[in-house]
Every structure is written in structure tokens, then in C-alpha cells.
Amino acid sequence: MSAERYLLLVSAVLAGSLAVVWPALASAGGAAQRAAAFGGLLAWANTAAAYALARWAAGRSPNVFLGAVLGGMVTRMGVVLGAVVAGILLLDMPRLPLAISVLAYFLAFLAIELTLLHRQGTQREA
Image (tube, rainbow, N blue to C red):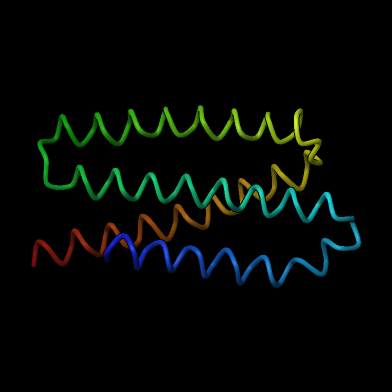
């Protein structure tokens, strides 16, 4: 799957799921809605970078692949952590909705990413 199609897929998942939970979060206040959207966008950016790195490294040597994927993972973890801390301290977002949003979207996008990368690898072998 091309990077554009992947980004379209995860964007649709993000937009659709936020549309579903948005009314429920309204009762918790606008700050909870902003935190959920911010967390979703952080996870979206994380998965976009992860997918791009995995696609770039796929045809390279095992050392380059592991370096790109593992090095990218450490870098992305640090950036996401910094953004979450900034969201809490600087943007005054509620912690629980932000944490739940980041983790839930991270897991959903990770499942999508791994499924697609596995399918691409299987198709290449056939």
C-alpha cells in the first residue's frame, strides 16, 4: 500500500472515531475533546513516520532496516512523550483523556500498520 493510501486510511479511522466519541466527550468539557483530538493527531503523526521509515528501510540491508526502525522508534517515542508533556504543562490539557487517546490510537494504528506491512511482505514473497 502506498504511503498516501495508508495516510488516507489512518486519517479516516481518526476522523471517524473522533466523530463517534466527540458527543460523549462534550459532557466532559471542551478540554477533553481537545485532548482527545490532540492525542489522536500525535498518534497519527507517529504512525505516519513509522510507516514511512518501515517502507524506506524495507529493501535495505538488515542492519539498515533495524537501525532505521529501532532508531526511529526511540526518536518517535521521545517526540511523542515531549508532546504529551507539553500538552499537559503548556496547553493545560486534561491528563486522562490525552493519555487514553494517545494510547488507544497508537494501538489501533500499530495494528493497522503491522497488518499492512505483513501483507506486503507476504505478497512480495509469493
